[in-house]
Image (cartoon, rainbow, N blue to C red; front, side):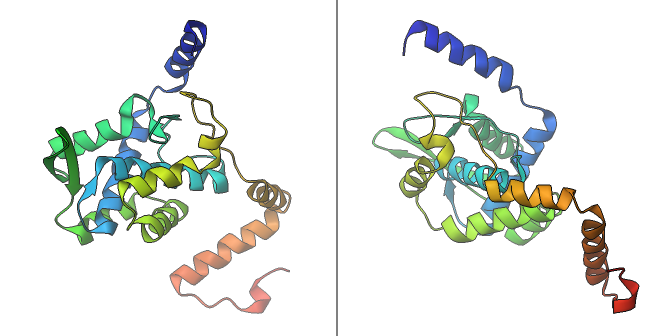
Length: 216
């Protein structure tokens, strides 16, 4: 990388990666969610990759990420700019919100994290996620929760944002064409969308909706 390329990347990072407090809070919630759902000791690398996979998948569906984290190309796969996710993990550990243990591997320190009360932690975290966010976190945990750090790193490297990036670039999430098409259709049919929302509200509340109550 030339000095000019490095300066360009550095300036872009400075402009685009300022973290808002709500992004930090949501990152904490997602981290705690994964630890509660997995119910075991999880390495720092695993946490970073799981949060990334959740952000990427949610963005494909909605056009935004869950945590608002910016990611960049790294030799071990996508990583949060300025190690923001790892720093957030450390904040949770320092506050006593999650447990941790420091080990050693080949002379380097290793960090593993977990929560003691998985049920209460998941209940609290899930209440702070909307339905779509909660489902994505559940899906990622169920599908990739058994992957080790190396497997998750390899998987994250196969995602489109990473494959389309150059060395040390910021990663660009992209909403899927199918999701965009669906959003456009729903936007062009507000009455239909409203009926769906009312129907879901009635279903959640346990109310029966008679056919003649719906204007179709």
